[in-house]
Length: 93
Image 1 (tube, rainbow, N blue to C red):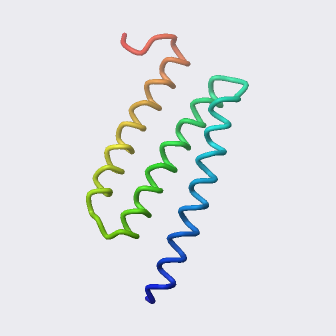
Image 2 (cartoon, rainbow, N blue to C red):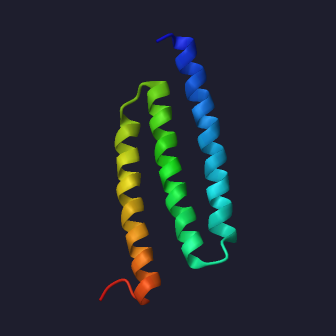
């Protein structure tokens, strides 16, 4: 694969993910219900994880892969905790 094609594909992917992060932030802030806010948070951490992966591919630094794995794990735990709080009103039983 040509270096020019990889550069432009990564640039376009980063721009698209940044736009998706802005839209997810808007949904998280302006969501009419708590479920919309949780969904916005879920989309925000997923997009940030993907943005770090694209940045890692672009720079060739493998450290960002591990950081994105940590973000994915913490985001999943946060989503489960928020869903449990919305359903039952408490996180720890």
